Image (tube, rainbow, N blue to C red; front, side):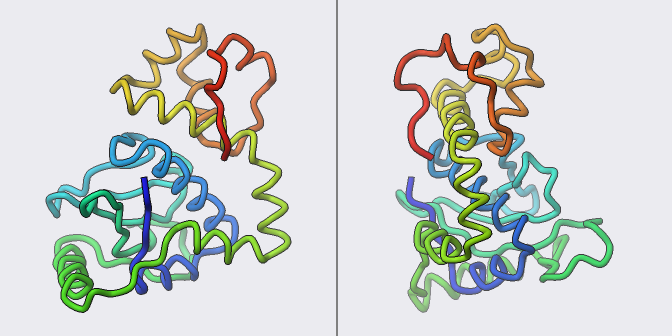
Length: 203
């Protein structure tokens, strides 16, 4: 599924530390693979605003979040920032929480629609990030791990099953599935040897 960012959200994304941008890029790839069916722990609904969801890099372990909606056949991010009680001293915009922040989110969405703000595709953003040699090296090093993670989340999303149920199907522990879905841990070759051919595609 196509994933795009509004200008302000992309500017906020650029303020993240490099490691967190890599984690966000990894999470975005999962969202592209599974679409709006991508569920917890990688995304969750924002209770204060109907239809708004948050993307949770590193399955929620990252202090950063991206906030998005589905608009037609496209996922559009309108904001990104640090979650509440995030690491003291972290730099970057603390996207307004709680209720006052969500009304600000709504105003930003209305402005994007009214002004027909040009949206930036996630592929455009990633291409820019890959110009950085350090980012490019790290991204390439985790390519296999990311491909496995994308295959797992896409399979689960299409079937509406939990990590626990998938683990049983594959003869693995739920914790192993959780680690593999992070997309940053290179999987042992034997873990995928019995999976159906063609399961793991490009990252």
